[in-house]
Length: 383
Ligand SMILES: [Zn+2]
Image 1 (tube, rainbow, N blue to C red):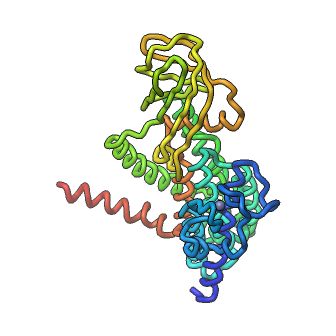
Image 2: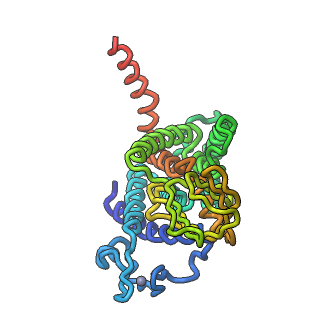
Image 3: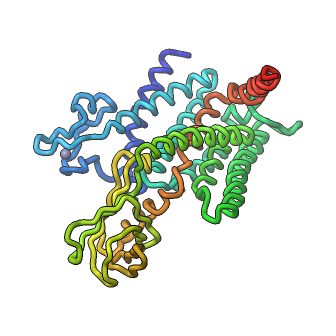
């Protein structure tokens, strides 16, 4: 790999990573992208250009706001996202050293995956604003993407021009990505009787398929499932050692002191509390919900304070109707509700999509040659 290209890729990655931090913060909140300069979320002070240099500024400021009256902590995630993006850009030019157009396309795709990963971790959504244009761009640029050309492509139709074959291959990848998750979602939802995998995952694997092709879309899903199973397993194990459920604190006139519960269930705009103190129906309450960060793999606890009223008080079970729920609160409530059911799958799909884009050849070899041989040796060696 050309050292000059590598340095440029790394520096570009740092700067794009810095931009991704802005995207991750603003896009799900519906804020404009380029309109205003960055401010400290704590004190509102504008961030000078020399305090906005990727990674370096964070180290020089020791991870705190420059304003001496504020000194708010700046999360280590910001420089980490910048470094991660830089490393991914480096890997992209390393994977396609003789084809810079593909390297650039893959770098842009990896940047989109980074943004999707962290937005999904923070908000449990995969934004259409990234996945949909991403699909369109990936499809339109298929002819300059080496993954849609021999020898990396899965199939080609004889007699057709390479560009046309590239479009067919990218279109097949898009359809495969969307179709396979949609099918899993349909079957799993029917069995589990609740929503398994969101439509966001469908669009994400469609985007991945449009970039890496139909066979690699399946590999991406396989890697995503493996990663999800490992992390989910570890989290279940850790969760067993230290339970980290959503915590509920209730304050009310009828209560002598705040009641704290380790297990509250959110059902729409109602709360279900078990082993609750006996309260009269209609009693007014203040409710504070805390969702530990480990539960949602986010960087800080999620808390929500709302007013509520006891809707019904059954046998040690309390139903609290939440009042004055604003639209923004409803989004966060959805987070509490869903967090009981799953960890987000988007980041794992994104991991699979990144690995196959960067190591398409190795993944194929690993799954079609190495693993079958390994499995055979296990069977014959065991006899
Ligand atoms: Zn500040």
